[in-house]
Amino acid sequence: MQLKIGKDYSFYSLLEGQADVAKRAAQSFREAAIDFSRVEEFATKIQQLEHEGDELTHRLQNHVSSSFITPIDKEDLRELSQTLDDITDAIEAVVARAKLYRINSTRPDVIPLADLIVKITEKVWQAVGMLRSGFHSANLTSALTDIHTLENDSDALYRSALADLFFEPGVEPLTVIKWKEIYDRMEIAIDSCEDIAKIIGTISVKYA
Image 1 (cartoon, rainbow, N blue to C red):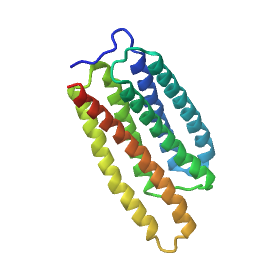
Image 2: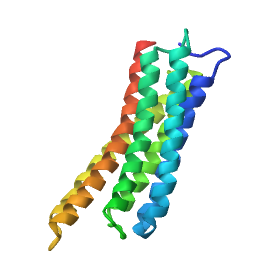
Image 3: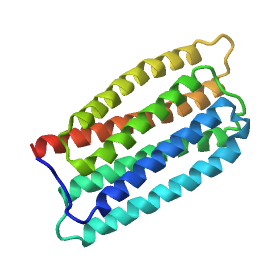
Image 4: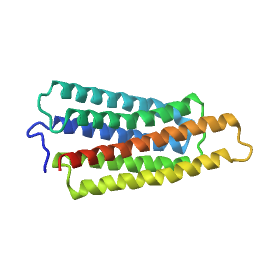
């Protein structure tokens, strides 16, 4: 079954805009993760992206409220929009905490996680862009599968990063607290990407 809005593609455009903001935030975070000495610069940049994402979220929510007919259930649209916003919010929170905690150098296991955040947000962007053509294309199914795979990969990286942090010889307790929160926020961003895949999968079943 093909789900389309007819001539009104504004819902899709707004969702695609949110996915693009999340992808750009992930790319900026990847740059920051290489060397946190520039964290203030990237914190400002990602905060601006977060504001851009918020504006798109509000526009979509308002459009849903003012529309009598929507392509899918209004609650599904709201959930997709809010979860896309959650991705950007989580990425912004990572950099904001790095700035707050005055972290000016990275750890070796941050880069692989940052790379994964870039990859998974790119897959989310691709998946959201395919919604214009319906919820049952092979390419969309492949993108959703890739998102789940990347999330599983992140679990292993996250656990390894925490183990290295906790058992690092001579590590200060305050350092552990700071970095654990940063790792946790990175994991939240990745989990939110998987949530998008789950939401789209549920909608696909609903409209099968």
